[in-house]
Image 1: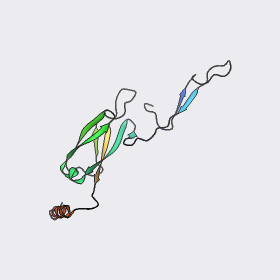
Image 2: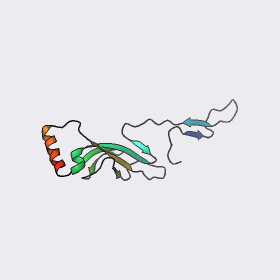
Image 3: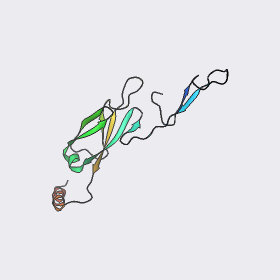
Image 4: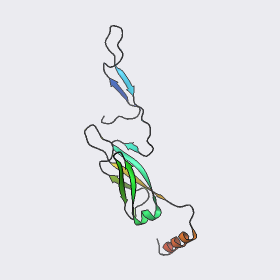
Length: 131
């Protein structure tokens, strides 16, 4: 396979320990991949969650994000919904063929648990308009 998966066993022929006056045996290596704090893998694609403010989801905004290649600015379009995914092409995991997967950013909209009196009044005005 192009990518090595967690728990996969790799066989390296003739790389193991040699018996006395014998030939080298095979070396078997089991791969364990630690979870990353930000990214999850789906083949060559990387997945991440991005928490955005409710107002930014409604009006659009730009958010700095970290990628394997460093920081970049992601434009969150206005009116984006909870759970929608934005694709950043060729910012995923490099494969043996030289291609790269994509970075898939899932939008998580932060809903405040408490509102100020002013914020409540503004939202009640939006509700009156049918929003």
